[in-house]
Image (cartoon, rainbow over all chains, first blue to last red; front, top):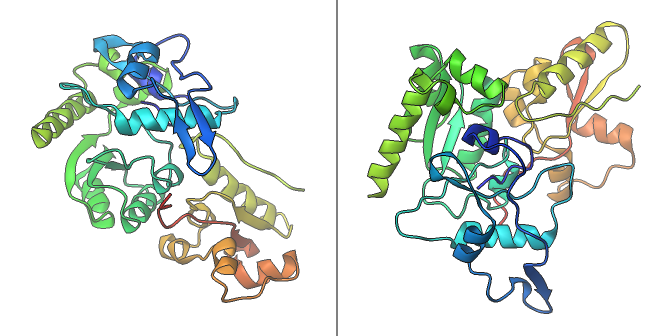
Length: 207
Length: 103
């Protein structure tokens, strides 16, 4: 589920073409009760109807992309799906916008595991530390690690349990820069392999 | 001259904004650098350092805390809440989200 209103997750998934958005009008504002999703719009039904199926069978749903306006009814319905979707054997992975705004407004609250991704730059670790101070984030993923000193710097700056570290990988960076999925273009690359191990670790934790 | 720097996260906006502010100042201009990001990092790019950037108080939060009267104008806001950065740049953070919204 792509919560970021800038383009990104579809490309990283390897999806091309139009996005997969919920239509307007699935929610309504009721006097005294606030926003409510209309009856008959169960999360799993909305996923089945509106999500696009991408490579490896991943279902993809996005909140919306700028410069278009994300209607409040769409935002309410999207968050309803995010927080309410459950199906045996399925996992939900959500990509939030960069920075602190969306996590601070509760968009990560649906998840039991909230990965804070940080590289060794001061801006990145400062952002991660702000999230930790605000109680957002359960685990640290150190990214673009080029040396043991990088990894140590990230761990020293961000007081969360380290779940994985991803090495800097020019193949991964090239794929992202060209709008391709690194898992397709560089499947044996060190960064893709490290993310694969992270996925295995997360599945173990959830079991 | 007023310049706004915008773009996708990770594209280098803040670094470029910081360098522009310093370059204008070195060219002899008075410069106010406004960090309008709710996750403010411009101080690092301006060169005031990580710790000083982390300690910066945002104008909006400082006013909302009630510890100060609303300043009468831009000059006083910048005087009260701005900090000095290298090359004479004056830095002010507009707002910062530092607590989760309970709603």
